[in-house]
Amino acid sequence: MTKKRIYLFIRGKVQGVFFRQAIKVVAKKNNITGWVRNLDDGRVEALLEGDSESVNTVVEWSNIGPANHALMRLKLKLKNLKMNFYLLKFCTDIF
Image (cartoon, rainbow, N blue to C red):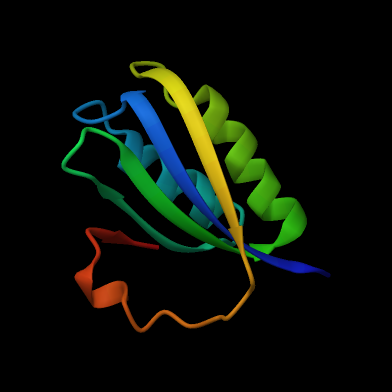
C-alpha cells in the first residue's frame, strides 16, 4: 500500500467543540498515526500519516466533522512520507 503524510488546517468553529478528540477517534479507527492541536488563531492543525486510503478517509471525515462544529474551510498540505515523529512531544494530542 502507498503511504501518505498530510497536514490539515481546519478553520471555523472547531475549538471548544471536541473536534480534536473526534478526529483522534476517527484516525485511530483507521490506523492513522499523527497529532492534532489548537492554533492561537482559532484553527485546528493535524498531521496524519498512514496508508493513502485511510488518510483519505480521515480527510473526508474532516470535511464533515462532529455534529457540534461549524467547519468553514479545510486546507491540506501533502508532504513526503518520513515516518518521523520526533516533534510529537511538543503537540497537544498524539494518536
